[in-house]
Length: 108
Length: 179
Image (cartoon, helix red, strand yellow):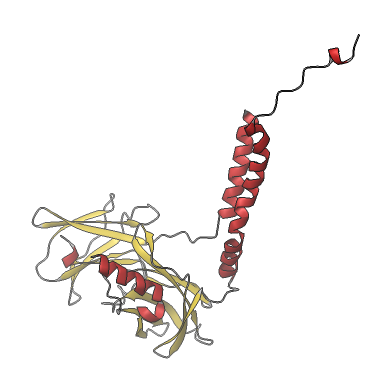
C-alpha cells in the first residue's frame, strides 16, 4: 500500500513539474472603503498576496488636489475618518506605482 | 508419482483492473505531453524569444520618448484579488534609458503624478505593468501613459484600449451587455 502512495506522489509531482510555469507572483495593491454609520468612512488596504498594509499612507484628497485627511493605516490595515463635504477621492499610496484610487461616488 | 500433481494450481485469471492498470500508468505519462507545446511557448515568451509580448501593440510617443508597447498575453483581463487586471510590457527607445526615471500606466487620465497608476518594473528593454481594469470602463476609453524623466519633467499620452488590447475591448463590451 505504501508503494501505491509513493507512486501516486511521484505521479503528482511529475504533473506539478510539467504544469508549473514562471507565472509572475502578483502583489498588486488593493483597497476598499465603506461607510460606517452616516458620518464616517472606513477604508482597508492590503496587497493581493494577502499581506496587510499597516502604516501605509492613505490620504483623502479633494478634486482640486487638497489633502483633506492625511492618514496612515493602523495595525489592522484600516483607517476611519469623517466623510468630507464635496467631491473627493481616497488614495492608498504604498509607493510610486503602487496606488489605489477610490472615488467618493464608489463609497456607498 | 506424476509431476503435475506437485505443481501449484494455476494462478487465478487476472482481474480487469490488474490487466489494465499498466496501460493506465502509460496514460499518466502521455497526458502531460498534451501540455508540452504551450509549456515551450510560455518558456519562449518568458525568455523574450517571441518579442516583447504575445501581441505587439505599437509605439507611443510620450513627450520626447518613443516607447514600444506589447500586450503580454492576448486574453481578456484576469481576475486578481485586486480586481480584474491586465499586463502590458514596454521597451524604451534606444538612448532613452538614461533619461527615463519611471513609466506609469492606468485607465483614464491621472489626477496627479502620485496617482499615475501602475509602475513599469523590469529592465528598460522589457518592463511589465499590471493595470487594474475597472469593469465599468467604456470600451472606447484610453489608457494613459505617464513618463517621468530624471530631469523632473513629466510627459503624458493617451493610448486607446482598442489599440492596446482588442481582447480587453471585447471583454468590456460583454461587461456592458451583461449590465
